[in-house]
Every structure is written in structure tokens, then in C-alpha cells.
Image 1 (cartoon, rainbow, N blue to C red):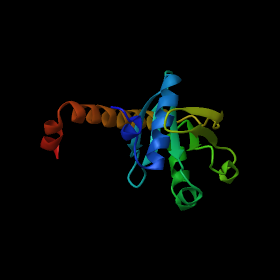
Image 2 (image 1 turned 180 degrees about the vertical axis):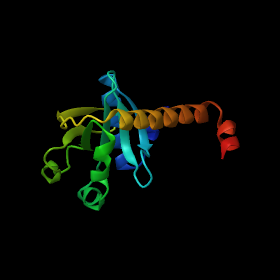
Image 3 (image 1 turned 60 degrees about the horizontal axis):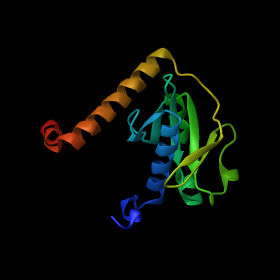
Image 4 (image 1 turned 90 degrees about the vertical axis):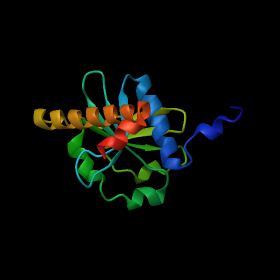
Length: 153
């Protein structure tokens, strides 16, 4: 493999997701991308921290991508902290006050502004953790045994 760029996702948002997941892993968080916490919602990255904290990160690759996002308010009730992840060229002034900010590229990420903490209720946390665990386990099983996933469809 002479060209590492061939291993990178092709879409800008996916590159941001990759960097965010790497950056959060360095902070001892585990992540699931494109997680559906409830019907009609799909978060770019959900992260589970070492103390059980749940973060949602929405990756925005352009001004138009941000302007088109009408669902992000719905994600707030599914996490303890909410963040936007953008690259260095994104006009960060567009992002709402009172939300977290992560600066990322395809290789890493850095938290620039911590999102405010709004702890989940016990029942909501249990539901989110179950969704997170089932998604992660299902994806791992799909990688190890693609035929088994086809049996469940």
C-alpha cells in the first residue's frame, strides 16, 4: 500500500468522522458512526466515555451541509454533551452558542469548546446504551461473519 490516501473515506463528512473517532479514542471513548437513537434521527458519531458519558458529534463539512441540517436539536435529548465537528476552513462562527466544537481532519481531532453537560435520565441512558451496544455488536458480527447478518434480514 504505497498510497495511504486510498484508505481514506472519499466523502468530506466521512473523513471528519474518522478523525473525530480517532481523537475521541485517544480520550478513551469508543464510538459508533451513523447511529440511529430513535426513528427519524441518525447521528454522525455517538461516543461512550470511560465513565459512561454519552456524547453526540455532528460532522459538518461545509456551510451548505450545516444550513441543511434541520434535525440537530432532536439529538440533544439523546446525549450528555453535543458537539459539532468541522475542519479548519469551516466558518465556526455559524455554529450555535452553547454547543461543543471539535476541530478535525481525517487523522485526528481536538476539542476546542466543551459542550455543556445535560445529563440523561436513567431510563434514557439505559435505552441509549442498549442501542449503542447492539449497533456495535451487530457491526462487529457483520465484519467477522457477513453471512450471519444476511440470515437475520
